[in-house]
Structures are given as C-alpha cells and as structure tokens.
Length: 224
Image (cartoon, rainbow, N blue to C red; front, side, top):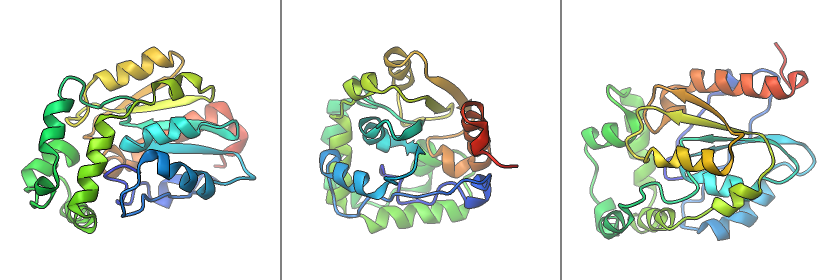
C-alpha cells in the first residue's frame, strides 16, 4: 500500500500453486500508517494463516502487523526507516503538492520506478494510478514515509522473513537492505535484476522466488 500500490502486481497466473490471493489497495484519501492499521487488521483473513507480501512503502505496515497468525512476511524493495537517509530534509522540501501537479516525464518514471524500456501499457497504468490520487495525498504520503520508523516493530517480529531486492533500484538507498539485515539477521535475501517496481517488471521471477521460499517452509501448502 505504498505510492505504487494502486497498480496491479502479481497476476493470479503466477500464484496458482494452490494459493489464494488477497490484494489490499491503499484508499485514495490520505491515511497515515497509524490510521491504516485498523483497515489492514479488518481486511486480512482472521481464521486462516497466510503470507503477507509488502511492496515498498507498505513494509512498515507489514512488520507492524506481523502477528502470530502470519506464516511469513515478504518485503519487496521495502524499508523500515527513511528510504533516503541523509537526504530526507531535501526531499521533504521538494515533495510539496505543487510537485505532484506536474505530469512526470517518461524519463523520470523510468529512471526512478520502471527502469529502461518499460512497456507502454505499464507506463500508462502508472500515469493513471498517479492521476487518480490528489497531489495533497501524494505529498502527504511522501512526507510520512520520510519520517517513518518501524525498526522496533521489525525487531519484535519472529515470523520468517524474505526480502526481495531490486538491484537496479534508484529510489531506495542500499542502506534500507542493510538495516533490515542488521535488525533481522535471519532474513532470507534474494536479488532480482529489476527497478523499484520489481513486481510489475519481473512478476514471474518474483513469484518463483516466493513460491520456493514458501515451499521450503511449508511444502504441503504448494500444489504442483
């Protein structure tokens, strides 16, 4: 449920190994992570155990929610502190509503989010997703992300944790991965040659890694 979580991610085709998928989409109106906690708690299954996939800005919410009912958490290009330590002040000064009233050129979206030679349909979906959300909401979301601190929440987690790293990520600092490794040394790290929007650009590779992770922990959950 980050900025990019208005986009479709893994196709059911890639998660058809006997698993059901529930996609949580961030409300268009701005809600802080604290305000979103009841929304997440009410939306996730209460009577079944499940794996929680958290993409980018949704990682702090995921580690907060990491309750005993979870089988595991998968963090994809995520973070638990400021994603740009050392640059937060500058980014906060720039990330005002006026900035998000401008239509970002393709070169900017490809550089920060989609990577080179992004499919035109994905670029169009990203433009549509950004257009649906007001500049005030986007600005507020970025401001909150820059101040986020879920490190204590991550320290308290005990569920298995998989971290998918986008090796061509130009949005997040490499420190984000190092911080997760420091706080949860038992985290399983896997790298995918992809930009920040890893799930959108490399869904098959991401799904293969996740299925292998789940199967290694609970082989009975995966059907051929």
